[in-house]
Length: 162
Image 1 (tube, helix red, strand yellow):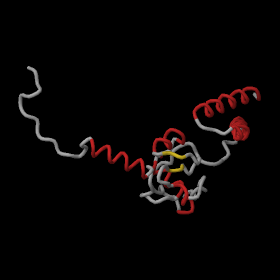
Image 2 (tube, rainbow, N blue to C red; image 1 turned 90 degrees about the horizontal axis):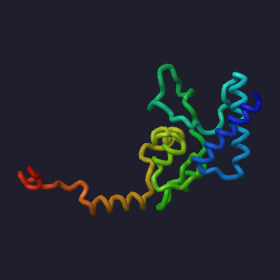
Image 3 (spheres, rainbow, N blue to C red; image 1 turned 90 degrees about the vertical axis):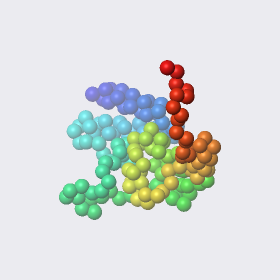
Image 4 (cartoon, rainbow, N blue to C red; image 1 turned 60 degrees about the vertical axis):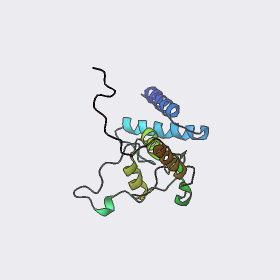
């Protein structure tokens, strides 16, 4: 049983490290955490809670029968909130990575949507998900390409070969 758990642990960690940025100094603790979770599962104890869940949070509010005390407390962010938004990037509060657009990173790396992210850290609904400079650049490109302008109706007969 122990060799099976070791083999599974190695495969899980190898898959995770190949798809995510992980510092070399974090690999031993990642191995230990995954191994402990595998042992707990094998013994029927379930997986101990640790850090941020990789599954998205579901729903917008509390479910039936839940009290406000049952709602999860906001997590401690990887960086202070006043340093998370800069002109050139948005820092992910889960892992500390600097991104131009946070939504894609949250989906790919943390399997989380924007609403779940905001709830997880107790952030307001208008919290920026895109760096201000990137948003400005995209706005300029949209205006240059004529996005949002009304086009004249197509003239009958032109451009169609019958």
